[in-house]
Image (cartoon, rainbow, N blue to C red):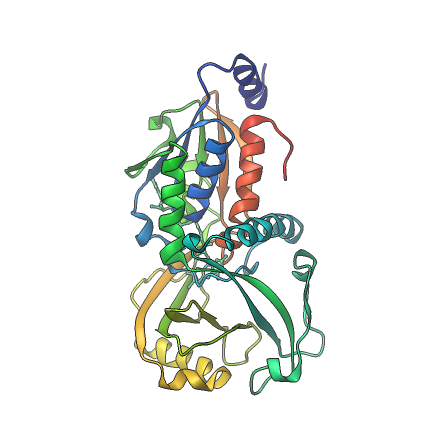
Length: 332
Ligand SMILES: Cc1cc2nc3c(=O)[nH]c(=O)nc-3n(C[C@H](O)[C@H](O)[C@H](O)COP(=O)(O)OP(=O)(O)OC[C@H]3O[C@@H](n4cnc5c(N)ncnc54)[C@H](O)[C@@H]3O)c2cc1C
């Protein structure tokens, strides 16, 4: 009996017509997979229940950082690939990606620096680079991805690569056309592949007018709660929260006040900045990211979901592996 990969290879060898792949999910993960599959020469269709601006991806801060995603070894590999991709994208202002220095704040004597192998140029922060109340930090330059600009760029890049994007909610994979299917629907993925291990990780942000900040701050160990400040030029994303299992998407004024107080404590000049907007998103949590290929009803199904708090950070690395699984080429 031939495997799905052998089947795909056989079709590729015959090479007519190009393999048709349907990607279920039009957030950052689905769109990046679709773009890379199309660039690999496949005919790609995206099916998405929501417009891109209404996805969790649109709420992301979005700093390149591998937060709340596992397993560590694969996450490091995917993150490193994405870091290279975003570094190249930062050369084009139209993408909304910028490279920006910042500090990962440490509150303990022996901070867990497990993520640093993916970041070539990190160093201990100078005292002037550490916010009030903290004693140490790691300094590095990382991509900041303005999702309000990046997601439309990604959609256009998909269209330019002849990817079709259709608004529809998929209720079962058997109803989806294509020689292969990629399930990249974030929290919507589990029900499609009978996987009940996903859990929403609710996150709230408030966006302030940018007073001209030149660096980001990430303070995961803040005793008052997860705090990050990510400037994007036109605004500054202040967060955050990470509540496992919470499903509400309405901003909570009390939570917002607490987020702002933590942000003000780190960056006092934010006190005078007006609130521009606010949002709540549900991160697609899972014990580990799922990225594998199975065969369902005789057809390859590639699962790519459960990216937790790092879907942007992992997007290009995971997309490379999805292409490898779809075409039989080596993984990244
Ligand atoms: C407050 C907050 C801050 C964050 N900050 C960062 C950050 O700084 N860096 C970072 O890397 N990550 C960050 N994240 C995490 C990141 O946003 C997610 O990991 C990422 O958006 C997941 O992308 P996704 O494409 O898998 O899911 P989503 O963006 O949720 O997209 C899922 C897509 O699937 C579609 N879909 C679902 N079900 C179906 C169905 N049945 N049929 C058809 N379509 C379906 C939806 O319509 C949508 O298009 C943050 C998240 C939050 C909430």
